[in-house]
Amino acid sequence: MASNLSSPTSPPPPVPNHLVYKQQRHSPTNSLAESNAYQRQATSSRTAERSSSRTVRQAGYVPGSSDDDEGSRSSSDAAVPSIMVSVAAMTLGASDDEALSAAAAAAKAGARSSANKRVSRGATSELSHRPHTTNSAQPPPLPLHGSRHATAHNSMELGATVTDMGTITGTTTIHAAEARAPTPAMYWKQTKTWGCRPPKMRSQTLTVIGSQVFVFGGWNNTVCYNDVYVMDTETMFWSKMHTSGDEVPPCRAHTATAVGSRLFVFGGGDGTQYFADLYVLDTKSYVWTKARPAGVAPSPRRTHTCFHYNGYVYLFGGGDGHKALNDLWRVRAEPTAQGTFEWEEVETKGGRPFPRGYHTSTLVGNQVVVFGGSDGQECFGDTSLLNLDSMEWSHVSIDPPLTRLAHSATLVGMYLFVICGHDGADYSSQVLMLKLDTLRWETRTIYGGAPIPRGYHACALHDGRLFLHGGYNGQEVFDDMYVLELSSYSYLPQVPEFVIGCHR
Image 1: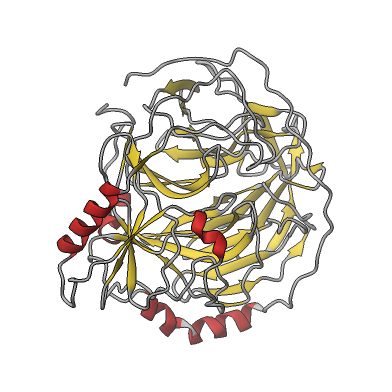
Image 2: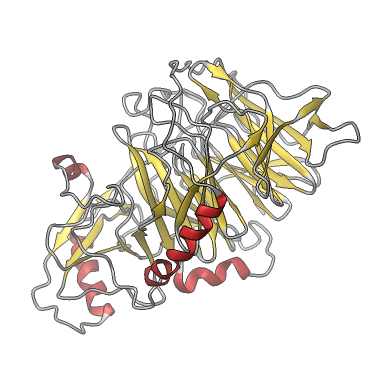
């Protein structure tokens, strides 16, 4: 694999501190017995949600609204790029090829070029220019989602259509008497959920254990949370769980890593506070344990990343309120005979990536892929690989580098699905697919209604579906749940082992 090795040559600038916020109490919780009863009642709703007809939901259902609110779109939505197409001749039974052809023609006529963008401090308060990275190349054709539904009763949103290299086309809306997504295609939908749903939040974690997703922490721009919410992925039923044991402080921008049936929560913060504590939640008994560290532990931080590999939970990067970090630590997932957890700082070769937070670290076999992020001054679009057996970094040039921070990156087979986030100039609702064996960006048509552009959301994969929860778009904090149905692409997680960059 061709790669460019490099190491940072200049110290990072400071990262600004945050404001102090107060804690808020939440709505009454459900007991485990009540939750199970409600889940059984809601089973039929989940079956209806995953109907094989794959009918795209009606235009009146506004993405980003609450589960019970189907209000009209606001005037601010006009800023979201979209191309509106009227296909008068389209009737019931029109083929998908005809619809796609019409969309392609309209999209090509209205295609706009999109240069790789620098950071606007007005969009994210923690970003500004820094000279050591250049991003002058044009991005490849990628689907740009995010237009809100039209007011017509019968409509569907098609994913962007590829036109020329270096252009991105907007989401195309096709009006038809009845619009259905092709069975093999991926599509977005805003999912109806039940039970005791989490409030509006950003910078929370969403972690899959078994058939359940666990949401912990987060904040609503005023209040931080320390509650545990659990959603059954079959019934789409939420429960706010009663926990016991050691008290966990409200936090945001932390990490929550699954190790078997346990959840390892590290770091994060609240207001001007930055934490360096490790808490372990037993998801069978819902008992929190504050881990007693052995030896030297990592410094307080948030916006870092963690992952589990070969009996260790690894930690990379983040920010401590004064500077961005690029150190690598690991802790044994099993306590010692004395009940302590052993931390150690890991020495690596090959030159570490630039210090950063708001990045993603995705485990792929025995390597971790670090993508994007920010050092508090600049939004990054670089990709680095760490071999966890040799502990050697390699820095891969992907042309062009696409900048992202506060995004999510999920491994689906040999693809890295990079969803939403901030590109240095604005929030995005794009789904970027990095094919890891070729290290090239690829595009797919994605049907349905994409989420409103956002960052600071949480995303996880389970059972051929990508779940996206919450987030923030610079003005509004969300509490919605979107599902990206992989459909025929759900076979991707079962692909055989591959080597990153082997077909580059």
